Length: 367
Image (cartoon, rainbow, N blue to C red; front, side, top):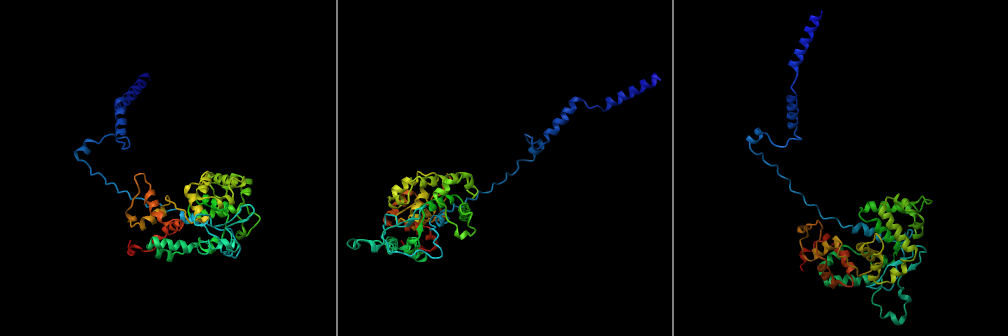
């Protein structure tokens, strides 16, 4: 009995020894498996080396990004939007006009009191003969000056009539708070998105009016009575909601007023508005031009103006490329200012037509 058991144990022991894999062999196998893992393989095998170097793959040439689209066209539509006037447009009145002043018909955000230049029939008869520019002729004066300085602009002007400085355009009532708020809303978003956000923003303060056409833009005091969290539900980012709220506070506290914006010089307007969070130099320039309807505003930082001025200067803008820093620039600031100097005091019109100069072939019109 004991001899059989002893034989079985001996046989099992012998079989285990035959089937056992030495510890070193196991380590080698695992190491081999690790080396065959392409993710951890550090060097090519001798077979790969003997086959010669492989042809490196060619890198595809990077396609240069197209120049960014200037945000101006979509932003202008909101900045220059007049206060709703029902089904009828306001009646054009022949008023005094100032090439270096505000010519818009402004209204106060809270009371909707009209602030505008005097109608011509209210000017002292002794001073009427000295009046040169009126809301009825200031656009004609500006257009004539542009064509005289740069005849190539004539077909562009004929194709694109300028409404904002027309008698009808100058009669439209502009709420400066609505205009500046619209400018903030339109920053860094498409025109369609800006319109949608603005409509939702206005709807927040018209919950009792189901007809969207009858919605009224909120007053600064209404915005101040709201909360930033509520403003954000219209689609505003946290930062934009803070900007709009801060702007409303400026108007509500009297730090910004319609009267000041109407009577102040351009430099004073720029100095005051640039202090407001969310309003950069470009935003103030667009507001001064399309909101206040000042005739002599010129923005060197706007890509559309840069491109149009470059075309007028005879440059091939299709060959101009972005700088190494990735910033597009069609003309330098100094060159633009020197070129625009001769268009004073109607540089706002020059900007307006710079955005549209590529719509018309002016290459055959000479220098």
